[in-house]
Image (cartoon, rainbow, N blue to C red; front, top):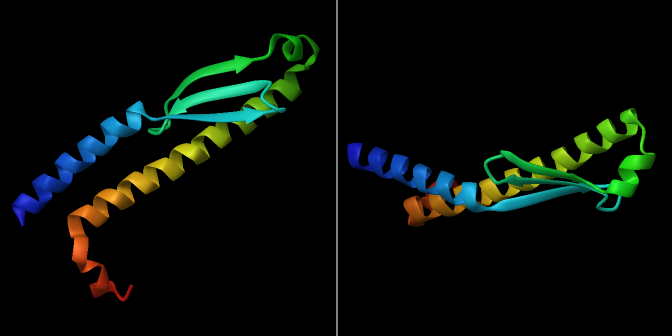
Length: 101
C-alpha cells in the first residue's frame, strides 16, 4: 500500500511539471485581449491590442479581462482533468470494471 502511495505522489509531481509546461489561451473581443496561462492556472501574460486600448473605457476593459482570464482558466481545467484521467487510468488500469463502468 505504501508503494502505491509513493507512486501516486510521484505521478502527481510529474503531472504538475507537465501542466507547468502546457500553455493555454483565453481571448475576448475577437482576440483584442489575450491571456496566456499554464495548465496549472498561473497567468503568464496579458496582451491588449493597442488600438482597442485607446478606445476602450475602464469598465469595458475590466469586464473583457475577466472574460479572457476565465476562458484561459477553463482551458487549464480541461487540460488538467485530461492529464489526471490519463494518470489515473494508467495507475489503476484494469480496475475500471470494478466500479460499474
